[in-house]
Every structure is written in structure tokens, then in C-alpha cells.
Amino acid sequence: MMKKKTLMLVLIVLAGLALAIVAIGAAKRWPIKSGLVHDTVIRSAQDTRPLKEKAKESGFFRETQTPKSNTVYADLADLANHSAAVIIGTPQKNASVLSTDGKSISLDYSLRVEYVYKGKLQPGNLITVRLPGGRVKFDDGSVAEIMTPWFKKMQNGKTYTLFLQPGTTDGQFVTIGEAQGVFEIPTTEDDRLVKVHSGIPGSSVRKYNGQNVKSFLGELRRVTGKALKS
Image 1 (cartoon, rainbow, N blue to C red):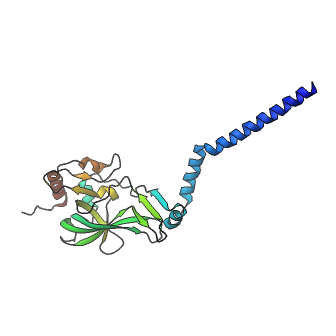
Image 2 (cartoon, rainbow, N blue to C red):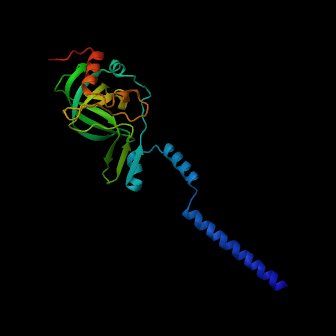
Image 3 (cartoon, helix red, strand yellow):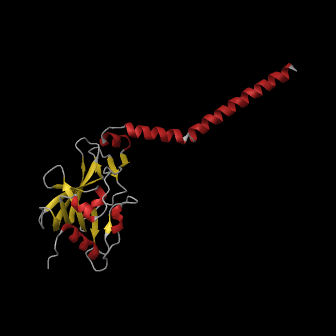
């Protein structure tokens, strides 16, 4: 009887050890995701290091930036009234620029002014238009990228109506309401529809997406008081 009890005790201990080993292995393979996600969010919010330091850890760092502008503009008249300059322009080239503190990235477009609806700029002027987001490569080969999925970026060679305010340096401008102040203007007979660059659902300016360019520019002339030149 004593031998049976001893054998039973040994079997129970061995079974317990086996279960413990399986549990430890499972924990390593399938960690508790909710806890890890929470910890990741907290670390991201608390991590105020420059992008170069973040990128150095893995060689590539990507972050999604949310809109900084809380102002909602109702229509072209609202945009124009709050803009220092309203123009049609064509980007010639662009480059990503790291901020002075190294914690954000912007895209600087060198843009030629084609037509002026409001402001002191003149056709033929070359200006810099700064938009949020971009990608930079550091001297150690690591890369940092700031994504703005809610803001469709401009493309070189295409033409845009822009609602602008002066930036931080001479000759530099930023768009009103970030993505709200950028509209792609078609320049061929094959495509006559305006394209809105704000990807924010419910944005008031999205009502102009797909509008005929003639109607769009007619409304723009009306709200800026700019007569069409013959």
C-alpha cells in the first residue's frame, strides 16, 4: 500500500511539472496580446526621443502622424477668407526635411506660381510649400518615416489650387487646414474633375471631390472677387 501511495505521489508531481513546462512554452509562443499592445502604446506615447535614435534601434522607424489642425473649413469661401494667398501652382521638386529638434519630418515642395487669386505673389514666383510627413535617411543608414494617410501628398508636375499662410521663413508657406487647403486641378481634356486631398471622413471640403473644374474655378473666382482674364 505504501509503495502504491509513493508511486501515485511521484506521478502527480511529474504531471504537474509537465503542465508547468507546457504553460511556460505556450506563454513564450503566444504572449498575452492585450497587455503587450497596451505597453506598446504607453511606450510610444512616452518616447520623446529624436527620430534618429528611434530609427537606430531597428534600422527603420515608422510613425503615423494625426492631423494637428482642429479647424474645419466649410467651403472655398471660408478657406479663402482665412488665407493670405490663394494660388494655382505646379510643384517642381520636393525633399524631406527633419525638424530642428529631430522629432518630426516635413515635405518641402519647390512650387511655381501659375495664377494668383489672392495675395501678393506673382505668376512665375518660386515658393516653398511645406506639408507634414516624409522620410529621411540618416548617416548610419537607418531610416525614419512619418506617415499621414489622411493627407494625400502633391505630385511633381501636377497642378493644384492652394490656400496658403506664411510659414516660418521667407518664401515658405503652409496650407490652410493642412489637407483641407489642397485641391488637384486637371489640365487635360481627358480629365475635368477636381480631386480633394483631405482623406478625413466627413471633411466639409470633400464635397468638391469630383466637381467639374470649370464650376470649381468659377466658384473660386466668385469668392475671391477675381475676374477671369480673357
